[in-house]
Length: 110
Length: 112
Image (cartoon, rainbow over all chains, first blue to last red):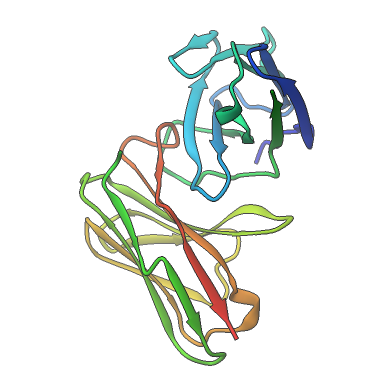
């Protein structure tokens, strides 16, 4: 299975943009890039996903490198509620297994 | 919020006893998953189901069994609980695939 590499932790100021990187140099042509986040004491929640083109939704934007070997989750204006562990996951767009790694712990300071 | 309920939410049990955790959904989603989460390990897949009576093993399936006799229920059973199975267990459901999976609130299991 293709692996992802994320920084263990990042810190951001409230109301500033946050760019969370993810490296996936062994990504296959059919792998989607999925992002989930987990707030303290809660189950993970879906954030965004994409294949080749950049994607936007109400929560975040996903920027995918042209060679697809890396991607960046962008929170346009961090709030205290965005403090969470963010997981970058590769996989097909099927129902089989989400393979979570350690993720990036995002700290947002006032 | 997606209709997914885990029960019980908290349980303390003794080593060697059987334990069953239940995941119930009202969304009629095809896929259901059981994960465990431990400090320093993130979420690890235990078992998953891709339909009624269709299940498969995940990364850490030893000591666990599952059953799905109805679309809405996915049961996780620890046949003989051990202290190493003390963990927080999350159930997840998805309709189409890995995008947009919904997770339950978790079950905190303590084996003493």
